[in-house]
Length: 493
Ligand code: NAD
Image (cartoon, rainbow, N blue to C red; front, side):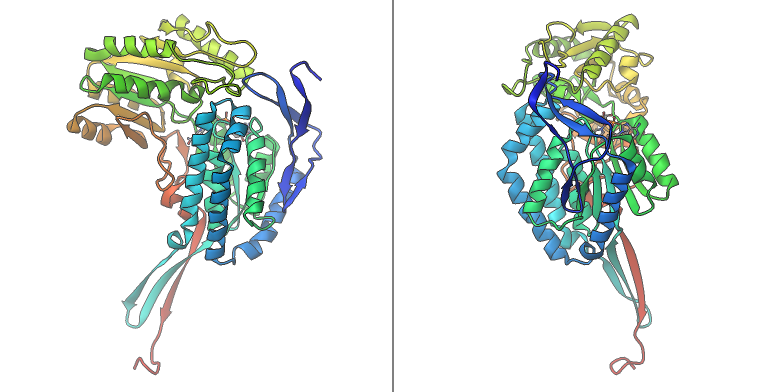
């Protein structure tokens, strides 16, 4: 046992067919608390055989669940919603412990998950088909929606609650069953969620959790019983999942990396833009797919914005988020901290101006990086080209809005973007010309509420139907279109 290891390190189990099952895998990894480095769990990396067993259980459960009344399915989701509300605080504590984000942000994340359950619980309305009574003489057509069968989900570490909730509530509400793989870096939360789904009355086999890494993913991508793959993670892995999953004839939605641009115009409320950009750039230690990691500022207000933003970033408090609700917690792993420090070094070598250096004054113990700000950043530099996924912000001065939009559009990632302005015509120009799927006006880069789709563009998304909103109902169902003729009956001569 290492010095950082606690005496009660638990081994994470899989949940298959309604039973907690110990993995037979010989490979496992330790899960540290990123604020302290203390080992809090050990996660076995499940084998392909274990994953196939979970898929089989999900297929068995589908035979009944797919035909269970939509009202009963909705009632279980309503019950789950209540339990999540009851345990919100405890769930937030687990997220903070394994992800490192402050408790207040973790509880807000739980709230986003609950929103997804509420959306899925309205399934009786969402699942309704449509019909046309007279397409030809005495002929009517009706469209019915059906579940697709066994679905799967592959999740990232940065939202251990919200992302799985983009997937399983709607999948099961539509009548599907699911095998879900949490990130091996944050395996604890989903197992607590399973306890709540059992308490809510979800039947065995409807939702199965298999913990692990590549082998689990490859089985989900190749096993012919799996009909769909919902992936959220980095761009490289997303490309692989999309190519490999579709090559095995599955529906795939892959939500991937981001480099989100915020634009601050001279007519904006600068203090408000500073506060919101601070949260966008440094909230959750920059580990958000909606992080505002690039800020384009109109020349006329650039000096004022940079001065205020830098001062506010210097004032950010940072520390062990298990102890106190610091604004800034750690990044997820030592490798992520080292990778971030390397980007800072490269940014300096490439000629960017380091306004605030996040390598200085970091607390001991965990994987901390303080807020980092660069100016004079160009499109050739890795600090702009790559998603760093850490509290590092590039500030670029621009002459006007069209120059800012062109700069943002030259990036191949296009999840979100936002604009700070007081001008309606600027808003319209921005909305019509920016190549990004989720836009904020006088907000940070916003993650849309669950009733709207999470609509990344360009290489931030591979697939057709997005997560959330009406797209998610389409993704998790297929249709029967029934054309019927009623002629020469007693009432129809
Ligand atoms: P990741 O790609 O490393 O991991 C995501 C999942 O893929 C994990 O479950 C992991 O086990 C699995 N995986 C990793 N490498 C694999 C491989 N070689 N083969 C098969 N499976 C593999 O991502 P992460 O670091 O956990 O999450 C951060 C990334 O997720 C960022 O790029 C972020 O932008 C992105 N993200 C995107 C969105 C979005 O909506 N677009 C939302 C959240 C996070």
